[in-house]
Image (cartoon, rainbow over all chains, first blue to last red; front, side, top):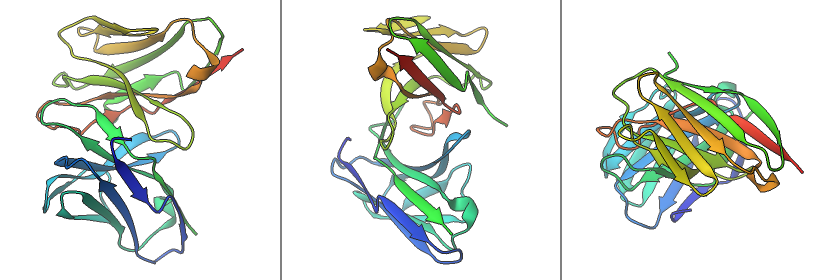
Length: 113
Length: 113
């Protein structure tokens, strides 16, 4: 698992509530990513970070924000959860720079009712 | 615009047979093409990867074939085993955007005993 821990593993929340998912890594890698996985859509990049306080948007960033105040932690926040954000969320790290594979955590299954 | 198209969506193969999954990409600047394997409840894990300067890479029973002119690459699993039953994702990325991978939609492989 490349030392990646995601929490919580499962969460059910109501529409309109804020939700924060946490990704913690133990190996001090600079590059961290949040992807969402939906049936028929593969994995889509939400946000990514190249270091502390250095974050940027991916292809499906609307409704999400991120923060990275420490190298080891990358937080994903759903500002006001909607049913369309029901998904499995994966955090990943890359040993980069250059082309390096992604190492994923085991995901957080989020259900928005 | 989907930049990486993967087929088939699902595949059933008999034990000992060959499994073939295909991907096509659009962006000719992509320079890293990994395949990931995902088991239920787990994050994707790197299986094998190729760069466009080679046409084939083999690791054990797994082979990537790469056709740069056709902008296609495929995963071949020889002597498929029930333990290979999983979801497989192809991906493509740019070296200048470490880890910002574009994924195919995934192929669910079932190997029947």
